[in-house]
Image 1 (cartoon, rainbow, N blue to C red):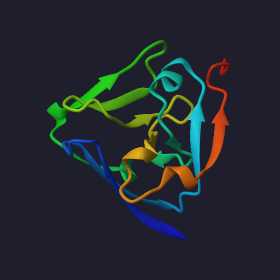
Image 2 (cartoon, rainbow, N blue to C red):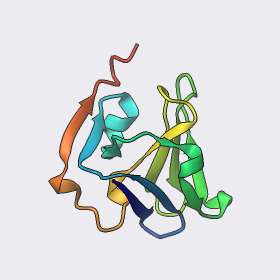
Image 3 (cartoon, rainbow, N blue to C red):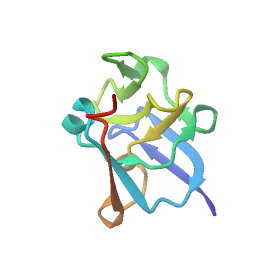
Image 4 (cartoon, helix red, strand yellow):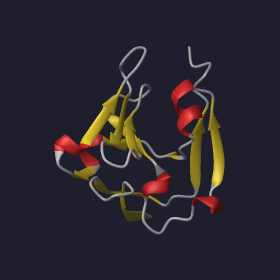
Amino acid sequence: MTQHYEGSCHCGAIKFSYDGEEITQGLRCTCSICRRKGALMSTEVIPLDKLKIHANPDDIGLYQFDSKIARHYFCKHCGIYTHNETVRAPGSCRVNLGCIDDLDTSELELVVFDGRNLL
C-alpha cells in the first residue's frame, strides 16, 4: 500500500515529500561516508522524479567523492543530510529516515548493506 511521506532538515530550509511503500526497515550502509554520518536510510529506492524537493537551491549542499556517481545532499544551514542519489541505481535516491515527520526509526528493522566492500 502506497503512503505519503513528508520530511525536512532540522531548520526546515529543505523539505521533501514522496509517495512510497510502507516503511518497515531502515538501511545502514558500511561505506566510509555512511559509517561516519550514521544516517538510517530508506530501503526503498525512490526515482528522482518521485521525490519532490521544496527548497531554495542555494540552501542545498552537495558532497561527492571517489567515483562522483553518488550525490549526497545536505542543508547548508543546519548541516542535516536529507537524501542521496545512489551509486547502484543512478537516477534514484534514498532518503534519511530521521528526517521524515512522525516516523519512529527505533521501531524499524535494520538492514545492513556492505558498501565498504562494494567493489
